[in-house]
Length: 111
Image (cartoon, rainbow, N blue to C red):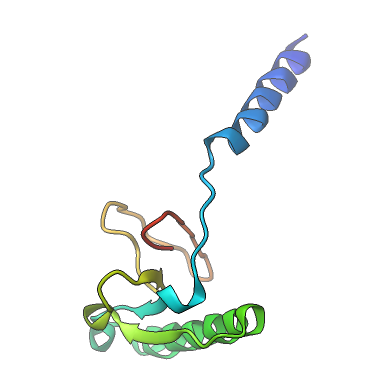
């Protein structure tokens, strides 16, 4: 009986997930890859890895869209651009990531 109750509860959660998600599109020409403004204050490893991750993202976006996405520092981001943040934790999250861990939060303003 307990297994059936847990299965039904899990099913209810899974069914509701697509209903809670919002669908939107971003035009490639409206997107820009954002590096942290404080890159110089980061560790030596972070100063190497974050730009490489941004370049890798840029490469794959070009493969998918056929368009080149710019890479700029946070304080140089154009107004109104869709921000693809790399190497930054959103200000409202107080979380430390483990080595090799990645986290994505996507909404209408940024990813």
